[in-house]
Image (tube, rainbow, N blue to C red; front, side):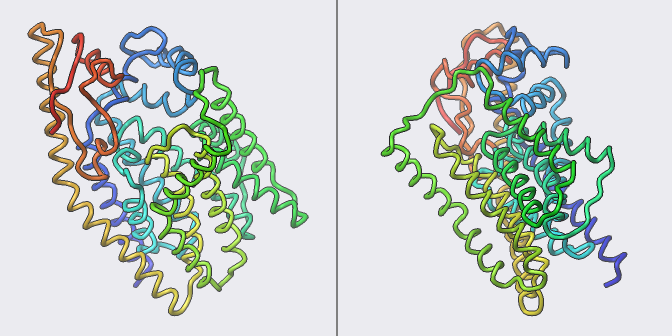
Length: 430
């Protein structure tokens, strides 16, 4: 196949991925925290301008957490038409796919590798809707993931022996990206910083100097992470006794085996098959796998582990596998192509299964929103409505307690406030 034909197929495949993601985004309404972030944490009033977001974030650091970077975007998009977020979020997902593709350093316009990356990202996260479609969830999980893969690409390239040249603009963008990424996640940001540190250490061990951009990016990431971790919010402390730590360790490892066990086995299998230029590919791949495990184990100190937090370890393990795939030759290369094609096929079948249910959830949510507006216009103050129950991992309701029978639940309070009524309570779920 000619290079121009391969390029055309590659672009067409990327466009189809974008069309599917845009459709799923359009079918995902505002949910739960999205309504909460429509209001300022400083004044309690509806945010109407960008200037009101900064004092709101300052107050946010005192009452919830120090993730200032992702929540800036949540509050920004909460005051814009939903289509704005849908379009941008689709673009960010495509940036994540192409970032992993570039990190793998395969052949030019390798359509099957691109499809394999998409398939893995579509199939492996246990709550895809929360991570990739829900506005608050996407800004906190998808967006940092997309920034991470582009940040670590130059690090991985240098460790692999490839020449990396960055101009001053590139260095500034790397540092800015590091600052935003560092402030995005307690565990994924730390894991990304760990990978950067391992790459710098590898350079020093080989008696080679670490370029300025490596130090600046790592320092900016550390600064953003410290800004997050040192936020003045009163953090709940988990029981630190040895017995409880061991119990949480067992729970966390159980989650790893449940959601990353097969992926870990695939990575080990690929590592054994990878022969061509194996040191250049194995070293960054092993680093990524180690960082994935550390990212996951960091959740031991957390009071609870939501399934959406598994995106970080899953992403890093996908990257670890992706780095190895283009190094396979002969029969192993045929296995690589088969694996990528299977992932894509399963992703398409899952999308076909999920789209009708996602559309159904969307219609229910919009009908409820219309009821709320009518109730507010009629002067009702206490509204009884229904909750929307998640059906598949591809609708953002799965795994979320959006509205409940508890009138004081924060989601109920925010939803009622958003539509201008006193209270909202759920009597059934649909």
